[in-house]
Each structure stands twice: as structure tokens, then as C-alpha cells.
Image (cartoon, rainbow, N blue to C red; front, side, top):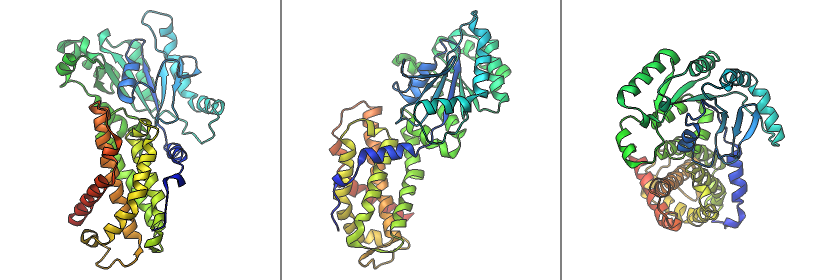
Length: 389
């Protein structure tokens, strides 16, 4: 197999290309001052997305939060305080901005030097109502009804439910059903273990995220899912169902004319880019500057050896469409199957790493996960499942 070195690959450029290719949903976050909007954003997307001072004001009372390597764009309303003059302005400000969203967005994009075409509309609205206030205000109802009338998907995020007893919570939910007439989700961002344990049967974070995904166009879901702070199961489904098939198709395209085994290095750039895309989806690309090159080095060093091993494997010969004699060429079935197996292996390793780092808070040694032995074992597992599937 011809040599292919990690130095031949521009990891930062490729990660930039991957980011640029991900469409980002625009999410509007509404609610009164103190409704817990920041806590909701931080819980769902992590604390780096909506840091104080990092937003860009786009018009009076509306701030845009966007990071280049994050797959969503958030628009946060300033909020209002009950009993102040701002309450009379709040609905008008939000409505005027929603009506003019496309023009505002283009203006901000030009100022920021963004040249790509933008999808100039709000894709969904999260309206935060604090359970701590123990009531739904007329302003909440008016704004929600206005947003519904504009055919925007709207969900109420009922925050700080640890401030209510069961009877009070039931009364607030009844008010939302009667007056707002939108779906709602119970949340609390409390870090207190006792509070978390007491609320475990009430909290609906997963349901909120499921609703958000379901109400986005298919083309926008990757950005949203990749931006999530956790939800590794959703990320794994996205990788296995959408991202890996994208690269298996690319690998098959390379091998439309069967390529000599000695030229199979043509597949390596595809496999490295796939690995980086998977790693980015799990959020691992931001953990260590050298993690990308580590993954690339493993793919480069192991790809040829594993492909040679796979071609001679009885497991591989039993995959439908391959037959019993491979010969010395790599055809579309070989290329796509091998790339799919590689993608499965990298996905599972990234899932294991993300679980250890993000869910369990452990410090890990990356080479303990990203190594040829682990990749080979997981690829063999994929071939066995394919054989029986």
C-alpha cells in the first residue's frame, strides 16, 4: 500500500470544512427577567455558548450568541420585569424583531464578515417561565400566542420547579395548558444532589430536547445534536445513521472503478475526515489540540494493515455482494464496507471517551482508547453483525 502520512493531512482545515458544512438552527429564547434562560442554555448546550459579554446585540433587547464551532445560533430576548415600563415594550420588541429577522440577520452577518447564505428565519422558540413566580403572566400568554400566530414552533420551558410543591406545580401546568395552549417541559438546573433525586420523576430535559429535534428540519438536526452538552445516545444515533453513511458513499465513489490494493491509500483521507467528523459530533475535538492528529495517525497507520487483514478474512467474504474471491482490487462493496466498519469503530471509541470525560468527569489517556487494537476488535464486531444481519 502506498505511503500516506499524517503530515499530509490538514486537520484544522478539515475540521473547519466540516463546521462550515453544518447548517445551524436559529433558536429564540424568550421569557421574563429571572426566568432562568441562561440556566436552560447552559444546561442544554454548555456554559461556553452564552457567556456574558460574548453576545452580539442585533437590535434593541435582542442578543445573538454564536460560536464558530457550535452548531446552533441562539437569540436571547432581554426579558422584562413585572411592574416596570419594559413590560409594555416587550411584546412589541419581540414581534418587530421576528418580523424583521431576515434583514437583521443579514446585516449582522455582513458586519461579521460571514458570506455564506443564511436560512433567514427562526426555527423554533423556547419560552421560559419561572415556576418560582408561581404564575403565568398576561405578557407570557400574549407573546406566546403572537409567536404561535406566526406559525413558529413554541414550547414553554417551565424552569426552577424545585420552588414549587406538587399542588402548585399542577396549578401552573393547568394555566399553561388553558391559556398558552402549547407543549411544556418541567426543568430545574439545580446542582443539589438531594434536589435532583427528589425531582427525577418530574424533570423533562430529555423530552424538551426530543421535541426540539423533532421540530427541526432534517437538514438542521446535525447542528443541534452536535451542540448538545450531553445526550450521547442522540449523538451516537446521528453518527451511525447519518454521518457514517455519508462517508461510506464517498468511499464507494472512489472505488467505482476498482482500484488496485496498492492504491487503497485513496480511501485514507476519507476515513480521516470521517473520524474527525465523528469526533467533532461527540465534542471531543475541543478537548486536546493533539487529539485530531492522534486519531489521524491511528487511522493512517492502521488502515492499510486492517484492510489487508480484512480482505483475507472469512468474515469479510461472507458479506453479501463480496463473494469468496476478492483478488487484488478494492471495489465499491469492499471500500464502503471497510469504511463503515472503521466508522463504527471510531464512533464507539468516541462514545466511550465522551462518556468517561463528559458524563463521569474522568481524566483519560487518549491512546488507551484510540489505538489499533481497539479499532481492529470493533471492526471485527461490525463485520460479524453484518454477516448475521
